[in-house]
Length: 322
Image (cartoon, rainbow, N blue to C red; front, top):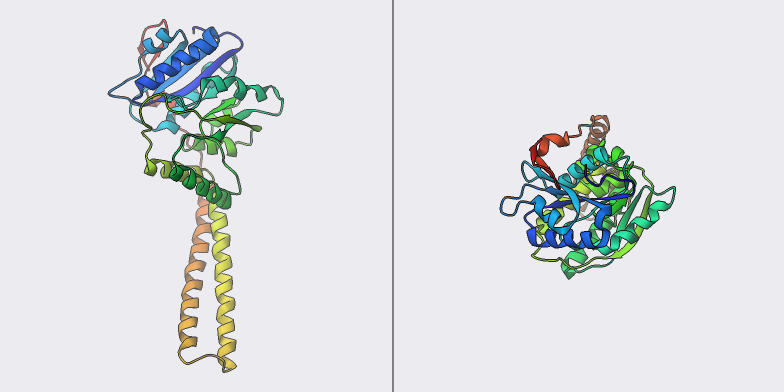
């Protein structure tokens, strides 16, 4: 393939109905990295503005356009691109970068993002945002989400799709079912050496984000799904604690009743409420523990990325079906 020389920078990005922003991004990458870059643009089922290989050629960069059969969502699109990059560039690339195609992940930041990969114990470098061009509502809910995520999983997540990794790092990620659900969560769970790099987030080159609030909420819940076993166990422990407290409170109510300190009608109401709380939380505890056992015993079922691809086009090459 054109451009597969040693020291190649491979950039994987999903593109969906965003011709204006993505073509500008291709040009910026071409100016900054010239012949040392190979762009893997994953067209996530675009209908009105399908990605054309001519956009890469006009920008002066070598690359591959992978057209998916249908819209799979940006996480699966990135997973397809990483699977392709892991298969084709594991021995020829210097590093592999994943980024969005709207310009918010700035091309000029790639050099700074890649730098920590020189350390032997670092496999992946993630962009941690120093500043954001976002609404106040988004920032508020994002801060709430990060705290809930830490409470339920015991891990901190402060990065998204913009990351750089050594050529060997995508291979274990591509073997994990979690990557097809939430890429950042998969990186956290893969036990790779992770380093953070504080970068500014730029404004979109054009248009508006196609990911609405509901989509963002769903994306956040998918991050929790990656750590489903941890979440279930923590929720089960919390329920068990509440059940124990309700049992102790019930015993205290009985003691007060025997001692003649309870007002008429108070004892039966309090005991009834505490009994309901105990039964509900106890049942929920058993359910959580059973579900965690199912999650632990579930087999890994990673999709075949080739089955999602309609065709691939390479720069200076003819289009061919997959």
